[in-house]
Length: 207
Picture 1 (cartoon, rainbow, N blue to C red):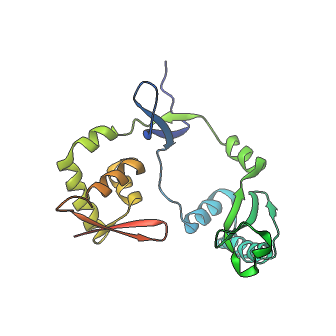
Picture 2 (picture 1 turned 90 degrees about the vertical axis):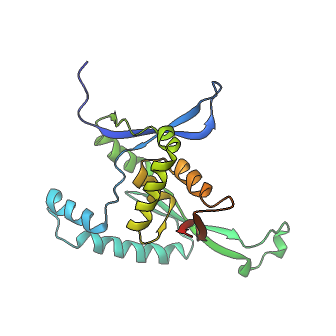
Picture 3 (picture 1 turned 60 degrees about the horizontal axis):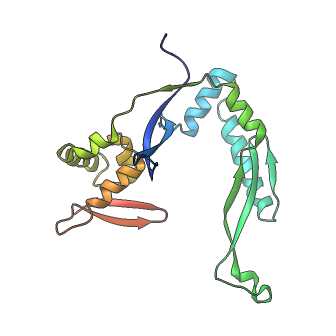
């Protein structure tokens, strides 16, 4: 059978959940995890869609300002790339509606639904999928000397700190395995790392 040479490359990694056979259930993720900046997106549109540089950035800027203002009034906004709506939450636990005051309610981000058109556009470009045969996560986790070497390289590269995402990308581990290993280095009598929570992210620094 000929080898498939097109389509999105994907990797397989274990989840924390085990199947009935005692093995970890797998999940798939894109093998290419390079983040494309707005500049890269502008460059791509200029090359492939003959747009003028800056048009896309300007359109996003207008959209963000208008959408933020309208959502602050409670509107849900439907666009070609999906719908956006404000999410609200109560700052404290309340059971009686009569007790709720305006000061008890805060914005809790934006609810996003990509919508049918966006999904159809993405599927239109899909040429199937190819297994990238990513490194064996368990084999990487078992080689502790190599992991410590990679940690030192990572800390040097990122000026003394590392996050779960950075370590996963650098080592080839899944985020679950990277977080598990980084947390292990923060424990015990002689920990190698100190973990600090900043918002939703955990920052690991060398002790």
